[in-house]
Length: 137
Image (cartoon, rainbow, N blue to C red; front, side, top):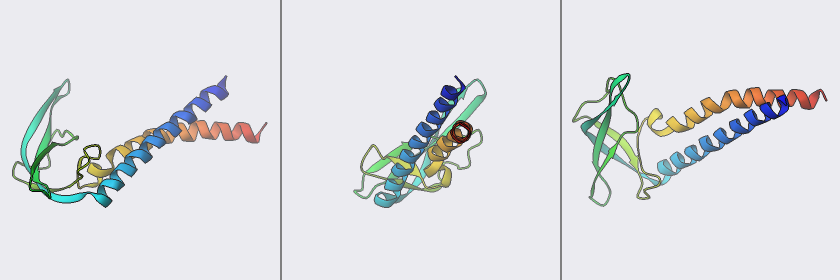
């Protein structure tokens, strides 16, 4: 029974690692074939929850075709690190699936890091147990 439990944990870790790699590939595609632009913080969206208000910056920039584009940050801040009127760099792509990301480590690689953080214990515990069983049977 324990082997099934640890095997399932290992599979969960592999699945999360797969999603981390997919997110990394999406970001790598955005950085390699997307374009960089300067975006201006135009507003903040207030997100209310049980722990209080957080704020998501809304950015506006002009793409290579001259069209005005706007996007909302995926990250909500308790204390925003930017103010209205501040300029930040973004990467954008014409393919809507790839989208727009703020040019920062956390803006580009947030999901990759989070998936790997959650995958690591499953891989270590499940994989370690499975290796132990394989070597001692």
